[in-house]
Amino acid sequence: MVTLGLPFIIFVIIVALAFDFTNGFHDAANSISTIVSTRVLSPRRAVVWAAFFNFIAFLIFGTTVASTIGKGMIDVNTVTPTVVLAGLVGAISWNLITWYFGLPSSSSHALIGGYAGAAIAKSGVGVIIAGGWYKTLIFIALAPIMGLVLGFFLRIAVSWMIYLNKQAPSNVDRWSRILQLFSAAAYSLGHGTNDAQKTMGITTSLLFAGGLISEFKIPLWVVLSAHAAIALGTLGGGWRIVKTMGQRITKLRPIDGFCAETSSAASIFLATYLGIPVSTTHVITGAISGVGSANRLSAVHWNVTTRIVWAWIFTIPAAAGIASLIYFLARVFLPA
Image 1: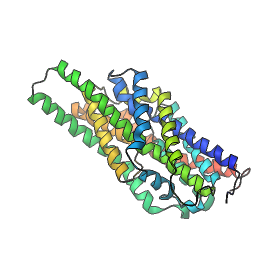
Image 2: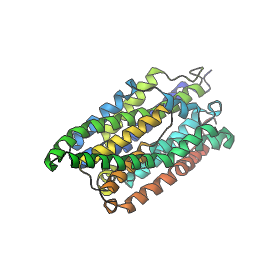
Image 3: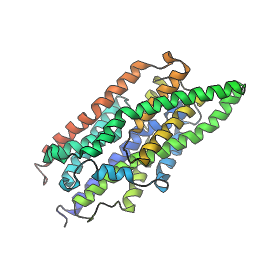
Image 4: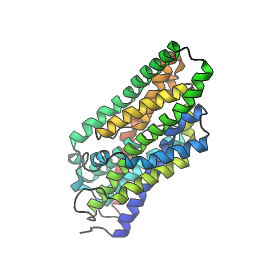
């Protein structure tokens, strides 16, 4: 039985897709920053390239991450459309704040924080499913380390291959530009599989809470709409964050971009396989830092990285706080 009017539920679904759009808009930098900064592709071609692979990601992977977000972290039986709406507004607000300041914070963690904050505001901390949070919180720390370590060692391995084969710099630049097209595509696939699934999980929770579905099973139209929204957001671009990711952390060459994107893609594919909502932002930032460290430790602008880390630390509590406030304001006009 639908407890709230269908028009309201449709409105919240639109807000969910708007979040997915800001996710693609905000995290477009993750997909294209390296390939733009190395000038392998122009910004316009890079966003089209990334958007395409973000969209087709649904053809390859399942929906394990969506299930984790939708029913593995918050007791779905206590969720209402108003909770979902407040959580989404909290996440979108934090995305826009960090986008304005050019900080590549995690849209994923903004969504998790907003969703949890609104749910706690309604029903207390008892709605939290601890088991679902352990993996996610562990990967907050582990994701950038994975990216950093893989990026560091892959860059060293590639350097040894170049040295042993006595490759000329011009030749290295030529083939690494071609390889970076594939590594950027792989990263965009990973971004689409992991990040779009988060909106799928929230939307399915909304449908369940509104009585439109009787069991937590993700409809095909939810899958398609989530991937379409994140792809369109990627086409919108996030140029402030592109500058931070591609230029301010360390200077990147095509071979560096290939190593960073390949390391990030491998990390994200692993997390998606395990059903863990990892932050693609954390992974690529760690990978870029790792690649820069392999070239020279001082090549990384650690003060910029420190600012990014602070944005990560504040993301979940900030989004949760905003969502809680939105929930308390919203229930004045809407059912709890």
